[in-house]
Image (cartoon, rainbow, N blue to C red; front, side, top):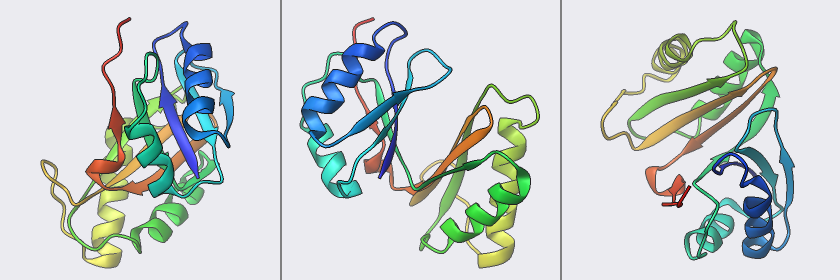
Length: 160
């Protein structure tokens, strides 16, 4: 299980400690972007989210579960989204965040990947209240992707 975790810039160390306390079994790596961490845990998605939901955090702002990390190349991205699309049984939206990659744009990713899923699986798009969100987090030369329900993306109020 891979988690993309954000923290206020400069508070990454605190966020790493909190992840270690909350999840126990976890390996956390920093990224090239301040406040952005990648955590890997052998826990199931449900278990990791439950533990983090009940954790009193001071530094973790957002936790996004990802299914895979792949190279940020169109053919890889398309292959991955079609594989992930098999998990969607309901309405969906694609949400992208691009960091450190001039070749990929947020809007283009959302539109192209959404179109691919509609064409291949005849899925219905719902941008305001989707049953599933295809999360697309570009981190330079890599891209983290996952299919998540609204309740699986965690947001915490953190004092900067």
